[in-house]
Length: 344
Length: 251
Image 1 (cartoon, rainbow over the protein chains, first blue to last red):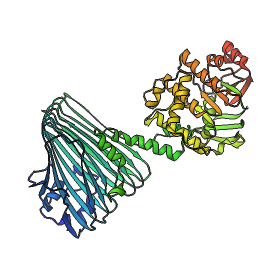
Image 2 (cartoon, rainbow over the protein chains, first blue to last red):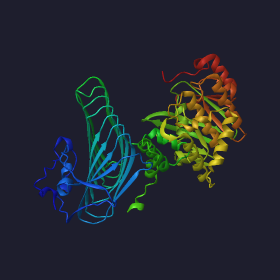
Image 3 (tube, each protein chain N blue to C red):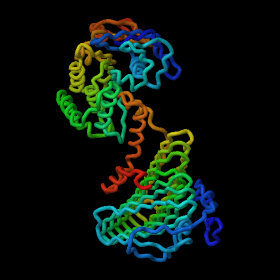
Image 4 (cartoon, rainbow over the protein chains, first blue to last red):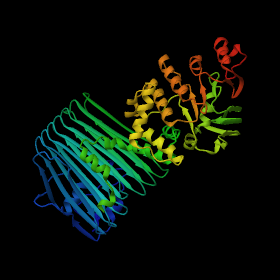
């Protein structure tokens, strides 16, 4: 099965403005021996046909191969995060999976997903749809640890109702080819949307975060904050577009990308971008790229801390801001205790 | 303890130290004075292996070892402590964690076991309470958002806990009020046990009144041009550099 050969699919091109710098070529042209739906090991979940028209064509890949969507409905507060672990084991296989998480009115809930693999030349195309209802508070964390010669296409569509909160934190640890395609169209009032990410890449890891946020109604906040620490010949793309439309008065739209390049061969393409059609708002965007601060490094060394350890301490300090932003302590603990060996 | 011979140092290809000689023995307190740009900070930065400083000639022997062969951390673990003129802010690194790590690095260097957390907390409590230093500084990130005075106090906490043999103070009195200068002096004087040595850079007599130097050196154009005892600092305070025959070569 070759994605390029599926006639019903209109796949994005590398030259498309939204996906500029994202290398789709290998994924779209690779001939996978099998296709398979990745089933959750959870009984009793509702399964629906996914009929939603998504904002870009990457969602159509999963839908085209399998349009069934599992629905996880959270009706009441849950004390601990729900944890979903995905282990891709079969070689040369294109997996699909589609999940909708509905968080009902006034409910506080959290979910963690872990994506790992022990496969070779496989791909995982994942569609996620979050519906966060009135006054609900949803926190989601994802650990991506997909290794060499494997692909993960993670499409996330978020829908927030009035006064809802949605906080998403992505930890990108793997060395594979990863595309995160995250869309939130804020059609309602007083929504709080926070999207954080840590891209900790090494070897020939290739990670792209393509993010689109649209403010269509009043008083909502979107805060996008990514940190990249890139080693070896890893490559990352951060492309964030936040649109504030005419009716979205008093919105707050923030975007930030910070990158530390830890080798001469690591590369980042960071493009935060705002499109604003009103005056009554707060907005900012920024991107920094550099190496570790040599003054800070010297200061730590001057107190007897060897260079390697000083380097590690500073890198951890840079990365820790993403951990610190997590609200749910159980998610924090999970992330801190995470070790790939436990899941592969 | 420290013997500097004919030390020549460049910063950005410009020669700053032009053949400096200095000998500091165990237990001695040396003050280094001089006009701005004379090379005072370059000397202490060179002794701490700052990356800006390129040694082009001369030798530095510390505790019978070639100091110039040691890297920054090794020099610190051999007992050299430089108090920074402007301590660096390191957001995200907890001050207490940093200090405990530094203590354990020194202990590992000396073949000793790591300090136990309880012993570390006890040590902090003991040392900070002696000198009325606010140990709450340790709960914050390293120097982040500290006022000028807090940064200097934090340097003093590090100094007390790392217990070095050669204390180098680069204008530690700058920007400090009278009470804070007294705290600096109390800490340094309490550490002087006849074995520790001090090299302090200052522009003012105030610190020297409180930490009496055995030797006062005047540095001019990269060389020590005059050495005396505390009375030289007093004379300098009264007459100024030109009054004691020092021509400012930077003008």
